[in-house]
Amino acid sequence: MIKKVQLPLQTANLVVGFMVWVLISSLLPFIREDVAIPASRVAIVTAVPVVLGSILRIPLGYYANVFGARIIFAVSFILLLFPVFYISAASSFTDLIIGGTFLGIGGAVFSVGVTSLPKYYPKEKHGLVNGIYGMGNVGTAVTTFAAPVLAVQFGWSATVKFYLILLLAFAALNFVLGDRKEPKVKTSMIGQIKGVYKNEKLWFFSLFYFITFGSFVAFTIFLPNFLVDYFELEKVDAGMRTAGFIIVATLFRPVGGWLADRFQPLFLLMGVFAGLTFAAVLLAFSPSILLYTIGIMLIALTAGIGNGVIFKLVPFYFSKQAGTANGIVSMMGGLGGFFPPLLLSAVHSMTGSYSIGFMAFAQFALVSLVLVIWLYYMDRLSTAKEVFDSTGSGILVTDASGKILSVNPAFTRLTGYSADEVIGKNPNVLSSGKQSKEFYTTMWSVIGSEGSWQGEIWNKRKDDSEYLELLTINAIKNNDGDVTRYVGTFSDITKA
Image (cartoon, rainbow, N blue to C red; front, side):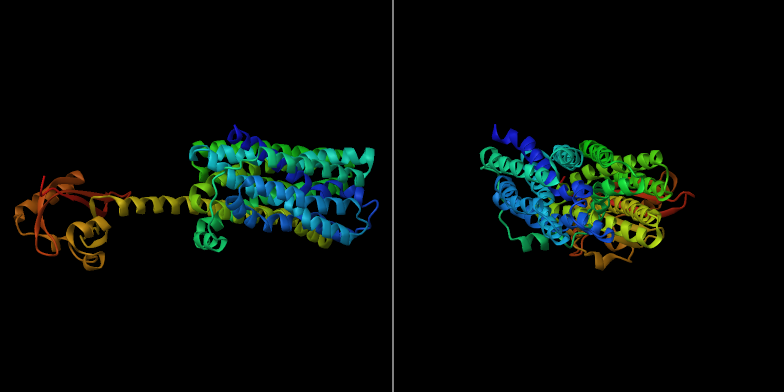
């Protein structure tokens, strides 16, 4: 029973964590009425919670494996009581920076669930499970929508204090319903980092999540003030529009995970980054509120799908270091939400326009699209090499003139010759001399006319022992019909 509760419980935990994470950005239009914040520093106040919320994802992902999600979630909510109470009494820019920094704990809890929940489900469901858990992002929408409404009725300080009750309730809920018997993984954090940091896929996934989740976080904290300042919308209206962006991105996250369970994830990411590129270019032309809304919704849709797809890929490639890998990738996603608001504000202060900032975002998305395409073809080559190296039959590849270009490990095992000893030579180094000249003439005549040949042939190992092999030779041709390679596949049938 406890195991079945973990997915809804941890998803609810993420909702609460993200509700707290965006408290300042959601209430900033109200806070600015009481606290003097220079216009040039508004972006810093909204971006600060993202920093600790990103960096802490690595240790929280690691310790979720060591202590279990139950302890990490409960302790995180208890620690969040202090910055939330501090912010409720804030009277200066410095107070908001200090309190906002430690609000980052609310965003950092994301790596706890993506580390813990895959332990309860088979791999073919990891995309959907992590996608459902990722719907906890809706917590940002809840605060973005509800906090301004409550602030109108009770004031922003009292609204912040309401969150203390919520945090206490969920800390207790985790102690009661959390899984005390969750499987633990106790390896050193340094050892886990060493096990993943040299894998280039980790950094590709980090970049991709930097763009997809980063755009989600960036627009979540950027939109409330932007819509008020640029389009002169009412604060509650701006909050509702931002909440709509968050809801769309959140709902499409499990869709992305579900699609990644059924289709090639890298193909899906190609569509994601193509969509983000188009949407960012649209925003760069400073359109009307209608076209701007369309561009923002397209970003929400594609970013949501991308977030779900990426967290299907991470546990698939890093199952033994899931906590640390999840922490690093999710950290980069959080940092992706830190820089864009600062960049957009800096560009606007210098040029009076947001267009250059949006074009920069479009270029990042376009570069990511190119990298996904490259990674897809590298992955195919890697798969082909794994098949080549692991097959039990001996394989040798020659050029059109018959010089050996490559052999697999099974070739060495069957013949005794290492790759270095035969590459550049003719396959006749294996000849036993038992076949006549006419045998080879007929064999090559068949290959020339039919493109392949199969038969039995006596060859000789490096130690001069003879063996009978079943040999298949295939001619590889280019688009013009010219032979570029010959591939020979053989197995020892002496004892057969």
